[in-house]
Image 1 (cartoon, rainbow, N blue to C red):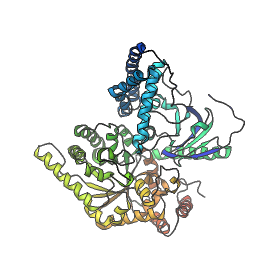
Image 2: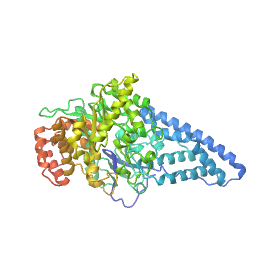
Image 3: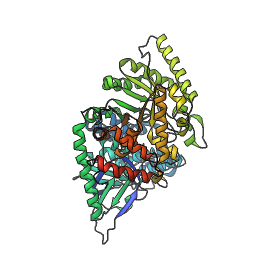
Image 4: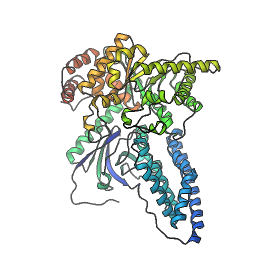
Length: 592
């Protein structure tokens, strides 16, 4: 409910921008946490009655979730329904129901309080887990508990309709709350919790809703009706903006929308510079449901499919070879001659606790990740490779190995690939005879031996997000150091040049994927360094294609020659903004 306050001071809060863009509007604060469960001490003879209420509530809650899942699939695509699968499975888990029954029996309390006690024990167990992905799954547990308490207490759980376009602010957006929300009226999202792999982030990116998560204790300061701005591009939220700030952001929003309209006109045109240099702009995807965005964006196929997401969505169950094959085949057949690059499972401490399989690690951030994980868990890797090579029989497909740090990892993967192909051949299962095998360049050691890796790989792909993080030793999700995550840092640019030069010497194709390619200023630098193959989020492609069609390679090479002489990210940024505002003013009109 809206309230008036005597004084409203502009407040800026930094968070984690998980979906780029600007949203300007009024806040709708949602309380997704903390259902109040009524405590009632019961007599022993009432215990069977409370347990019967619990079982009935489980059935009703499950029916509600099935209905919401069907609506999500109908409105946003079949693949989005998976978000509610963990909740439905949790309600089918006899351990959960048994643990609530035990609380009712042992403490002689009503079913609502039994749910509260049982779930509190589960959440306490999760608190000791450091892994980000698993921590984010605690919201699933809270979500299920809230729904059970709602049903038991007779509270209505009807769909949440926003009557006008609004910015949603919450401590956290629990998956079922998000699923029930009328997303057509959601301009932007700002939450205290959540990270890059949270369901909120995945859906926001998929739908192109500007979002900043991980804002700490921001939501408590917001009242419904407060003016608010979400800047997903620069990781910040502004509450009660001044008139000057509002005008600044409104100008940026108008400019962004004009550029989007102009860029969409270029979406179907070839990505060719003014001096006739052809570029390839491909899409990064993590969900099959994003496939329709390819044609709309003018993407030249898929340059990065993050296959680990089809695993994460099914955990703790491991997805089978056949299930993977069906997904990969759909990707291959949907992209036709433009093809798809499938990154093999890139699980690590940022997504899952690898030590669940291999024991505790003292420093998981430097532990089992990327190619190390799959080489260690060869049964999982072998199933994935079999699925990939089987799908490769249906079209153009490439394999990409993540977080490679040495030559021996590439050779070990190729050896396993040879074994898998021999097995498929022996079993007379149709499969691709040869698929290009690429190496992702994401860590400094890979850059330092890039000449050696270029000889081993059929192509190189620079994973810019991780390369920047590892080169600068900065976790961009950590608000204490996120400001040090600087794509235009001289160390990053020199690393990129080293990779591009090594590719030229070895005759190995080099592409870049990640957000750096989607930033117009950075894209100019990448073009000037010699990169011609880019992969980025589908929504960014029309804008970058328009940029490509607005520049001359000779000019951007001149700019990069000067950039290589500058010593700070800020100096590089100011120089580029000044130069680009003169050469492509329609792209950088505010850079004078």
